[in-house]
Length: 317
Image 1 (cartoon, one colour):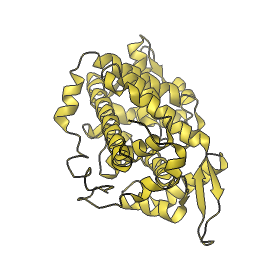
Image 2 (image 1 turned 180 degrees about the vertical axis):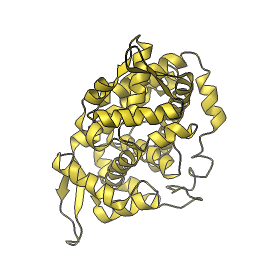
Image 3 (image 1 turned 120 degrees about the horizontal axis):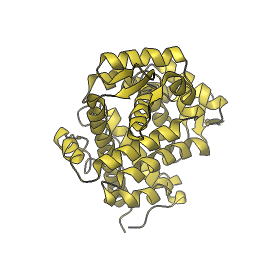
Image 4 (image 1 turned 180 degrees about the horizontal axis):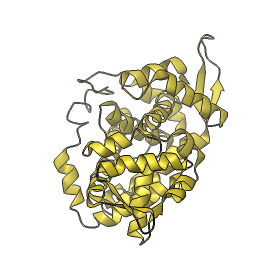
């Protein structure tokens, strides 16, 4: 199948070929491909994936990719650093790309995050302001002068593409059929459809951390998950992670690290090594991360399936 070109995408065909039709709580794009079952990621499928050959190698590579991308990254560490902020950022990208690159109005952004429980409208407005000052968003003219419209810049779109690509590189160790997606993400229309499928799963209420209440709670705290990933990676490499290193790598205060680790310890996810004053993962954390990463891999597979189906629906070859 030939993927769409940027010019075709900008004609707006993909944005108007199917209008949203709601199925339960799930926002729809096309009745023929969207139903409640399509957006379901089954727990038994998650568990089955964890039992596949090379899964442990893939999960470690995935954790390494996430830690490496976030270490020293201003946008991720200081701005998009918890579940609400991350979903708000994806919503900005989706509103822009699904409209053929027409940007988004702040009023629409605020409505979206409120509708899907991605956080408070005021918080996502503040996020947009920080991204604007950091040149990840840029103002664009609006037909209605009463509206303030913004558009993601190249670096913002690249951030999402490269984040997914690095995760897919790890995923191919257990799901080699996903390798073509890495290259397909360079195509603007495919990227837009993939992102929309990705975000639709979150809009339907899916959370990768759903299998562990501790991780679900910690996902709402700044950089908590990536610090747990770093602890997991450190142990796999025969080292350990201390408070000072975590604070430095992920641009948070030492007191924040201590607070997050205390909470994680309360959930039984980590232990403090008294001899080195560093943190180590428990078996509970290792198993919880297996389920988180397996869910992420299935999210990518579902987003890819959605993107391919949209391409075929709109432009059969």
